[in-house]
Image 1: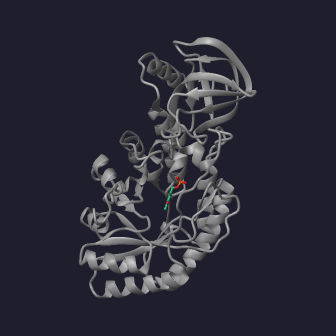
Image 2: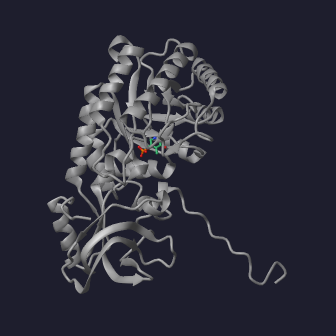
Image 3: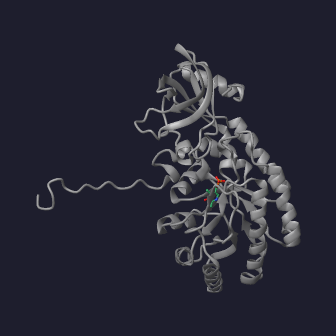
Length: 406
Ligand SMILES: *Cc1c(COP(=O)(O)O)cnc(C)c1O
């Protein structure tokens, strides 16, 4: 793949990292990230839609500090992410969601003055009420809706959120708690049903979600002022065609039209709309920079062995794709040149699954040349090891090798 797809600053820094013997490396283009987040913010703000960043896509503090000032807040999906984001961004607005929250995590959120809590079940809501006492906690109920999603890469049904029966129970629990003096207040609904949708597909889904949500709010939470509807994330990124990015201006315009048609908007006393994208914000700002350790032709198939591998960049292995890659002549290149139309790039791990890219056309590739993997700014380093989502590590227990009697 050609190297002219790389911004000059990225190419220069990649070469410098190689010269300093610092490969493999993650390289983040923070100016590009700021531009991207700014474009998303401008499109959404123009449509009167709030913008949260889903930290699970990439919680790197350097990235958070660039993105957060351009958003209305940060969404976290675990107690680990909550503590991490609060430490990286003191005073930031944080929305806390995710299944299976522990009492300890809920207490940390409540004591820390979490901005919004996305509640996953009536039982969780009862626990929040018990833990909160009179402390104010603003909650959204996460809805699990039976909407088939055409074109989705991943559908978030099953255990996530509440069906209509549980939502009705939760609405009643919230109302009774409010009447009894609890600090817990119902603010609206949260719906994240799928990922991998382009603007048109997401708007088609949002139309169904909004129609349902506005009806539900009128029926189950009458009198709720400026109810909030969080439409989730999942805006697509395309590893096969990196230049095909989610059309935020078209999406934002579509959302404002939808709201005008179905509701009227905050100015008209209507709902507050909010989205929480992750990957679409950060994916293009990250690069995994490696170099070629070995080249071989095995039974006619050309392989490049890259320094590092899927323990650093797990994305192509989990998603079953070829990570887009640009090749640069390395500062210490050596050996015979390889020309091939369908090079397979693997890492250093002793498993056939340690494959980063396939079908890569190369000309004059040599040992020491750089492999700059693109679109490594989301679900890349942070899903490649046991720190994914920053849940606590497991304990390690060992049965006595001598046996129970030993
Ligand atoms: C993962 C997730 C997101 C972000 O999804 P992207 O596909 O990265 O945009 C947003 N909201 C919830 C509830 C999520 O689980």
